[in-house]
Amino acid sequence: MNEMKMSFSSKQENEPFARTALIAFLMPLNPDVEEIMELKTMIAEALTNAMIHGYEGREDGCVEVCVRYEESGMVDIIVKDEGCGIADVELAMQPLYTSKAYLERSGMGMTIMSTFADEFHVESSAGAGCIVHLRKQLHGQSEFAL
Image (cartoon, rainbow, N blue to C red):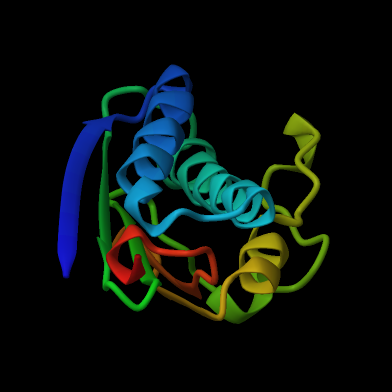
């Protein structure tokens, strides 16, 4: 198993860095283009939710990302914030639901993450931050198998 952890300010400008770092870290698994796009989309949605919804756009919060992978290609991603939390996780998981309609948010972030992940789970409650768990099996040809 290999693992990477990073934390950064909840500034929207940090999302591309985190997404790129995650993909670079997973390169030994040799993901195909479709897997890369799905991973990039999942992490972008999780990070954007933390920054826009969790910290409500404040840039003084901290977002933590932990990524682990096994030689088999199983990838675990955890995105954590200490923002305002989600009062009703079940409601937040509904397609097209958004608490920020005035910001022209689509309300599809949770749906997109659950579609691309093999396993998807959210731990949160009002005032307690949020932890997003994503799990995905990659089928690219790992350098470990060569």
